[in-house]
Length: 130
Image 1 (cartoon, one colour):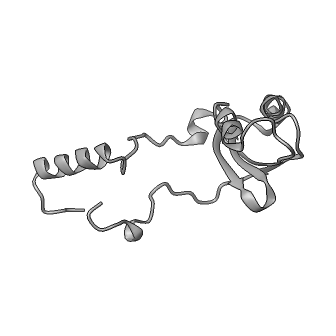
Image 2 (cartoon, helix red, strand yellow):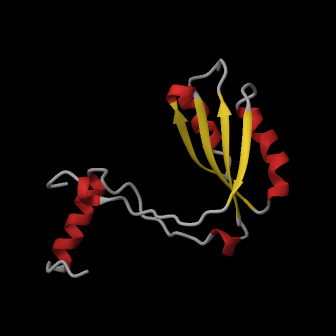
Image 3 (cartoon, one colour):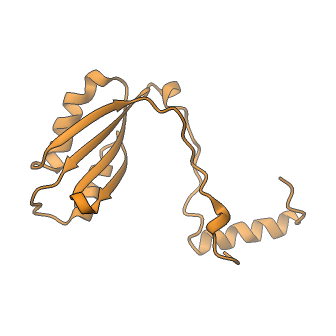
């Protein structure tokens, strides 16, 4: 929509937002089905006793290309992963790779169909002047 500002003013504002970390990066959103990743899985890992901190484990898991998100459910000591893959039949191999990062703990998987998704954050909560 029109912001009634010059291009230079808008550019400076974007630069400032990048410099302050409000804009972390600029990305292109791809259609997963168009690039042969039509299958989404939600994986729950119940954490037992870990030798490494949870944050380190999460960083290792997100390095697996198919792992898109890693969430911590603190009150249950669980990790929730969103994974994309070409087909559900590929899950056993991927599970073995995940196990190499989290050798203990119960792991469950649900193959899901994404009905709606969005990437835009609600800006009504943004601090004034951000």
